[in-house]
Image 1 (cartoon, rainbow, N blue to C red):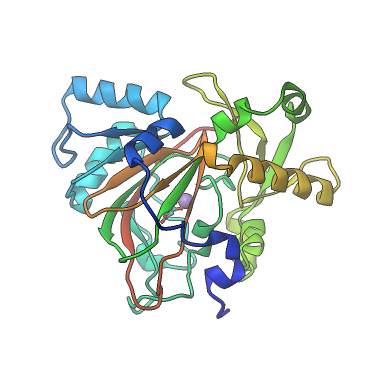
Image 2: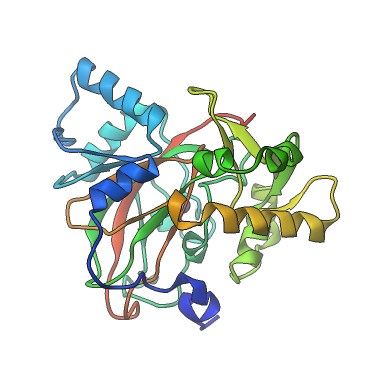
Length: 301
Ligand code: OGA
Ligand code: MN
């Protein structure tokens, strides 16, 4: 596999240059929030923690600037949100990176920047680990090394996108379940097919296409690159519906594009958003490395 992500998926171009809109306003329009007054390297007081968790319930993306956390500090901060997933998604591909605080990067197994990505699925809209019966609740990335141009992370608010559907369309989605699998995900992003061992480790699962946020009761579309078809429907019809719904959620009014700065820490709620990385310029030359932690979720309903 030698094609770059950009060649395979031209829709993933770098966003247009020009005057930047006010990013904080964009984040707030999207439904996220920037939190300025916390030093995340230090333990939170109970009041700070309560406020943070309350904020997270009503904002699918939280952005913190100017942080400098060691891996241990990121681990400790992540624990505020729940149980940390011990396993990295790529245990069978990248055993070295199988730790609670792992990295996402464009580095190859020798540690050199590469255009041939092991984690190419990150460049397609998805909700983390939706191919698990118990998918991820929250994911946190902390910028470590950033490329000069590109490499943004985009988020789409799937609760807003659901609410914006006409009542009739919402009615048609009621009760539908989508089948999610790691294998389908790999096929859909043009990756190497899963081995029998990998398929056995992650058998396909199905989840409601419209998911209820357990804390707020808000409904959100639950879909993305790991979802392949609709249970009980002809495969092609289900694929077409999922494609239409992804087209819907990625409309600009539901999307926030995070342009990483040194020191940024961003965390998101996988229950009511999907996300993807955008390629960066000269990926074979410039490094992009972020530290990542993930909090375990619950069975979607
Ligand atoms: C992830 C992910 C996107 C990015 O870490 O789950 O999808 O921009 N990352 O690196
Ligand atoms: Mn992801």
